[in-house]
Amino acid sequence: MTIRYSDFRSDTVTRPTDRMRKAMAEAVVGDDVLGDDPTVLELERLAAQTMGKEAALFCPSGTMANSIAVKMWTNALEEVIVEERSHIYNMESTHMTFISGVTPRPVRSERGAMDPKDVAAAVRKPNVHTPQTTLICLENTHNNWGGAVIPLANFKAMRAVADEHGLKIHLDGARIFNASVASGVPVRAFADEVDSLQFCLSKGLSAPVGSVLVAGRERIEFGRRLRKALGGGMRQVGVLAAPGILALTEMVDRLKDDHIRAKTLARGISGLPGVTIDPAAVETDILIFGFDHPKITVPVMVTKMKEQGILALAVSGGIRMVTHKDVGDEDVERAIKAFKEILG
Ligand code: TLP
Image (cartoon, rainbow, N blue to C red; front, side, top):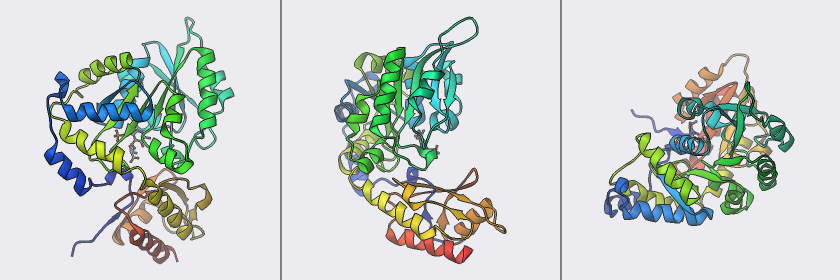
């Protein structure tokens, strides 16, 4: 008998909608390296317009979009300020050093929001020993802080520090639409405070592939050369841009349902033996909770859940679960039931 899994490992597991598959089949394509795939051009136009920036670049992944962004704003012997739990610093296979030849400088935060004073104190002027700080990287929502929304006021404070010290700001906005839906702040307001940002089409927005990097026209043209150098120039890629357009035009509003389900799940499991979670702190689609049980380790718990048809990820000291289009109310109920059966 095959088990039906409720897959809470990530919002990256979302499958394209039927409308996306149809759009893929019908997409008008060209050669995007030669600059004439009309569907890619339309996605890039729409992305730039949505974010209020001059230009956009369709990239195969969030990691490549972030890599290009760091490379396009920095030179060797420079340093980049990052939040200490950020994805760009911890989970992108060291591209800052590997590709850009710059050092990351981690700064602590409160739920992903760095204190502008700490950031200002971390800025370094170059001398024979030290690198020059040239870039600040932000992340919103913040994955490893359990999908926390970084408030717009914090972005404005970062902008002031950056302007004072002549730094650029790049936003890893993999889930910026989640931040916008949860806070009611338009994505464009966040984008206004940064020099570049990338957002992912392939997470909660459910497109199969892709991220878009947006910035000024001249920087994006340089980014296009970097994308080619990294092997990310793609040809008839309108077949992937077509679902990306639907991700932007049809899939944003429903993110609120994911946020409601994440809270329901958090409430359902809070107070169970071994589980440490504050449902009030769950702002968007990601739950990261502590798990410390006298008889059941985190890996054993994840295996037991899998046996009950619930997929989750073991993370340091706990478990990560993410709600998304392909897990509905019945999956949330099923997960809560499984937790109670295992722990109750
Ligand atoms: N995050 C993935 C894993 O890498 C953990 C996930 O399942 O959440 N920025 C942020 C904030 C991300 O969460 C991710 C992916 C990326 C960048 C990278 O995007 P991709 O996977 O498209 O390279």
